[in-house]
Amino acid sequence: MNLDIVVLIVAMAAVTYIPRVVPFFAFSGKLPPFIEGVLRNVPFAILGALIFPAVFILLIKETFSLEY
Image (cartoon, rainbow, N blue to C red; front, side):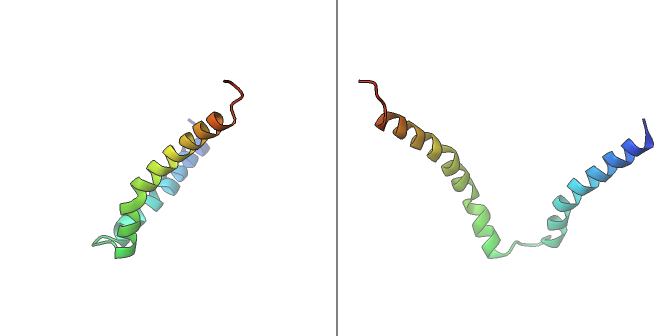
C-alpha cells in the first residue's frame, strides 16, 4: 500500500480513538452526579425520540385522511 494511505488510516484511527479514551482517564473514578443523572435519562429520551414522530405521523394521517 501507499505510505500516504497508511498514514491517513492511522491518523483517522487516532482521531476517533482519542475522544473515546480521554473521558475514560479523566473520569477514572466516579462520574459527577449531574452527568450520571443525564446518562440515566438517555434511554428514555431515545425511546421518546423514536416513538413520538411515528405516533405523530399516524395521528396526522388519520386526522387529515380523505378516505371514509
